[in-house]
Image: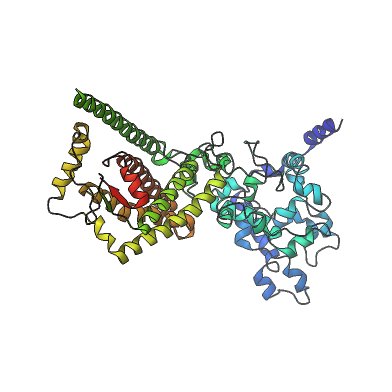
Length: 315
Length: 204
């Protein structure tokens, strides 16, 4: 019954805005002009030099948007009012304007349904189901899809910041965590991982903290240490799971550059065990076998000739 | 009646066997890391990485000890390939390994306290100890602290050339080790040179 209702809701849902075509250049000019009005207050410049007198600057400080970051983000071509509603069109904003801010699923219905099933199994749902929303991690003003960022370093920097903002800060962690839950020191619990901090610059937390069985997409089922991947060889091997994860958007470019396996990774990282050259490996293995056989052969000839000589001396 | 002559002081023998142990450990763990395969682990990856790091640092310390010991005692001179006639002596040595030994000929340049190594040994040991080892150790140290590797090189990660040099150098050392152990049987008796490496006395 629940499934049928969900299906009905899906069918009845309007065409997802998330799939809308981008605005025309004329529309974009209008959007930018409208957004500039919002940013005349909601930016560092607006905070320094408020266009109006008597504004609550303390409140404004926590509602600033950086124009370049926003423009580069997934929502960068959208009008502020698309999500923030008409209540924000004028200043002072309407008293109930906050209640009308759009939810992610209003535009991303299908995606939200898929993600929610994964999220429900996550450690975040287990401990924080009441307070944890998409926005807890995903800031709609800054986020860019991995497929858009493409550069693995940029993807890693963006995504790990989300995790570390809470898990590497007592203050931020305490705001979200259940009472009495103390933040485990992030370096200590990862002490088993060699070159810990370097790993965090090269790969995302979710590389290990989401189920690895799903090779098609990255799950929102964030797992705690009991379930997280601890086998180094899942990434550090010829058949590296990083291909289906951090590097999945670059897979089309994989050309076994210079004969290296997983050479798509080589542009940003040398991954021991994954980025290797089978031709070089084969040549060195052949050389090793030849040396061992040569030594054994020499030894056998020595034994035989010594015995022959001894026999001759006896005669 | 066998003659015996004292050839190797304790520090060289201690260095040699600790170095040998470190190289064997590094080879096994290094192979496990490079050829890492979840279905066929020689040594589990994170364990191999940890052991390889520790053994690598030990090897670097031992190498420093080797260089200092050689300078202090003057032993470094043994490793210097000495012309004139070095090529001729090398060829003579090769001829011994290639055919003379099968005919029961005597070692053409047996070790003496003054000249420990034959010409071929001197050339090989010098190349391994003063060319290949420093390259492998230095590239290994960069591997240990990858922040010192160049960020990128020709559009690829800067660690790639470091890794390649480390891999090739290590392969050369591994090939050397196989031949070195075998050539250790070429003394007056199969066991003579191994015995000398433990006791310091050369019996002939």
